[in-house]
Image 1 (tube, helix red, strand yellow):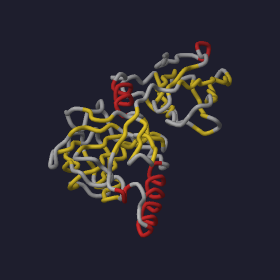
Image 2 (tube, helix red, strand yellow; image 1 turned 180 degrees about the vertical axis):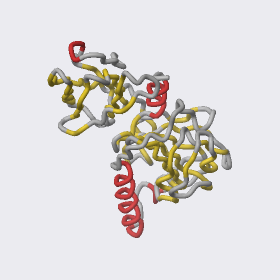
Image 3 (cartoon, rainbow, N blue to C red; image 1 turned 60 degrees about the horizontal axis):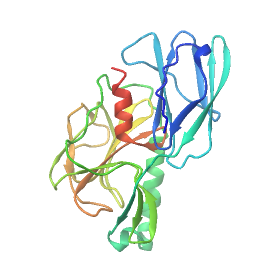
Length: 268
């Protein structure tokens, strides 16, 4: 299986790329030459490199359900070039889980709540905040055993099939959960599936999420620093037991959080 973390310094060096579904492709570009980048016709922001003023970076978020190639269009002072992005399907595992029946087949009175929560979340994740709040590498919200990886195919109660959009960490009820990096809280509430939830906007279309909390320390609008306590772990929402669900949303796409952190931190 091939995957490239590509450093692009001039238009002459560009070619086709490979990426894995559910991952972020992080590209680096020459700042002086680069003018624009798009993915299947949608603008992808060219952002300042965190440590090198001569470069710009771009996140290409690839959906877990992406199968078809993605067409990138790179515009520079020298012209335009099409960059095919080929998608390889990740070797994700399968999980069979047992949860409360109401979390698989919600009662009618819960359906409107679920719909509203979904719409609210997408509105948040589609918002691009121009400001970058962080200056340091990202950190883990807890140091514990991983109990479920991103991308695992999931079968709930032998019926409902989905996939895991984050990484789960073992955490007994009441364990402090820490902010992965600086940012602003844009969601703090208890939701039907995610339970006690905190979402932090890190700027530039990047959001970290912390689910199934038993209590929340932060409110919408709070500015947080890396390492601040966002809340305490719990077993709220659709769970099989106490744990933390940790994830990242990039361009309204849930991506592998550990992969994202590795790639961003490699810029430092």
